[in-house]
Image 1 (cartoon, rainbow, N blue to C red):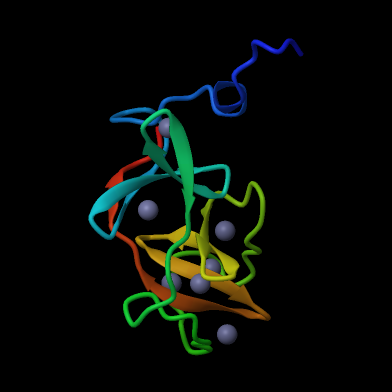
Image 2 (image 1 turned 135 degrees about the vertical axis):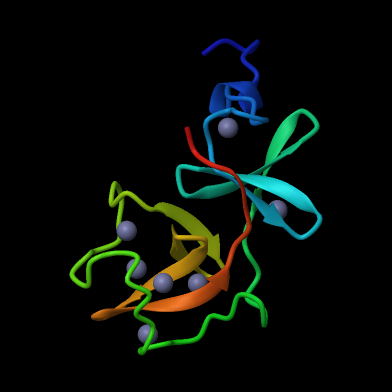
Length: 121
Ligand SMILES: [Zn+2]
Ligand SMILES: [Zn+2]
Ligand SMILES: [Zn+2]
Ligand SMILES: [Zn+2]
Ligand SMILES: [Zn+2]
Ligand SMILES: [Zn+2]
Ligand SMILES: [Zn+2]
């Protein structure tokens, strides 16, 4: 490491944008990109970390009766499960068919809809 290294570029060499290959979702009045379980918001020369707020639109409640059939009942969400991790409040959810799934015991809680603007490549 030389003193000429630029921290921001070293940690985040990828420039998010249209067709960058990451899923883009609508967050308030802007777009964020799902990147390795983080919600990235390009902001000038750096990238902000955003989190979906717990709200009436995206509640953090337990919904034991949620059975949308988007995945097998025995499916275990986790790294590499095929769903993208999304930071929500103080926990991590998974993006399943346009809404947030929160693994909770033997079921998944429905933590509300997310508007997908750009699909992962
Ligand atoms: Zn990207
Ligand atoms: Zn955001
Ligand atoms: Zn639950
Ligand atoms: Zn569901
Ligand atoms: Zn999953
Ligand atoms: Zn959640
Ligand atoms: Zn699920």
